[in-house]
Length: 335
Image 1 (tube, rainbow, N blue to C red):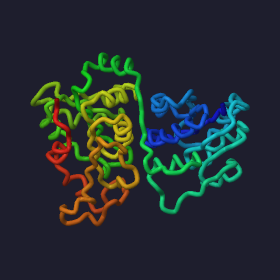
Image 2 (tube, helix red, strand yellow; image 1 turned 90 degrees about the vertical axis):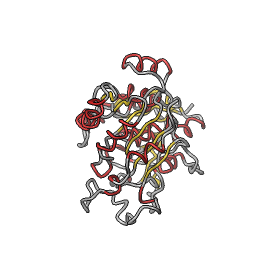
Image 3 (tube, rainbow, N blue to C red; image 1 turned 90 degrees about the horizontal axis):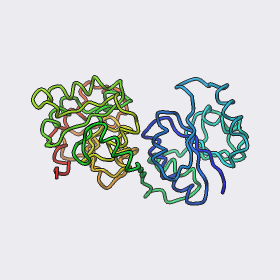
Image 4 (spheres, rainbow, N blue to C red; image 1 turned 180 degrees about the vertical axis):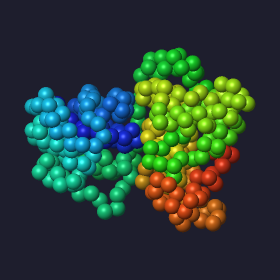
């Protein structure tokens, strides 16, 4: 069985969107080891096709040549192929230093000599799932949909530790790493939480704890304990388990949006400055709200998608004008 090393992207959403590629490689008999940064490694442990995960001790930025060379020496001779998913030079360096015979990736950052098989970056970039799946050399990527699986025992343990019951809560993921032009307003999240029958679990990084407090405070003032703020208090494994066990998940265009889609839970994904044409939640149970695509919304959002961190026009209509009632109407009723 050929041994393949996959160099993973560094963001959770991108990692989720590589799962169909893992499935394709595994189906043709490749044994997969994924090299990933610690904050995305749990995503690959939720992919049954992945046999092993190596956690890279790299930080954001910098070449970190010495660390890459040390890992390359340890794995030299172990792999037949490497798939380099990020487009950076440094991501292609480790497979080259490890002398892996076949090194596959896209053109990018003057790394021609580091890769043996190079795909041209398409002029009109396809949805990211198809972009990654194309590295398999196959075809017909339009129907590829990410799928994640958590061990039931891990889910049960997380629910017991955090005091919630399966299907008995909604998850809110109100953050978005890129910037405020991707974040539905906190006041809208608060109004939605107040109108829901089930409790709400708020998830995010430690940096988003204040945002989640802002959402939870007015709701809990009226109904103590209605919102549980777990931002920065859970591991990624626990966050994955909570999403997998949720009644539904409401999020911005973020990594956790893709996680919810891959678990197939009912979800509402709210888009503002970005576009669901490029990174949609690929699930039959996903409802996308994007005013750009709403012919009834007036005046039309000619400015969208702007892909800016902050609204260049100062109004952020694309998010402010999606009210809580609209999201509530898109959710399945509590059983």
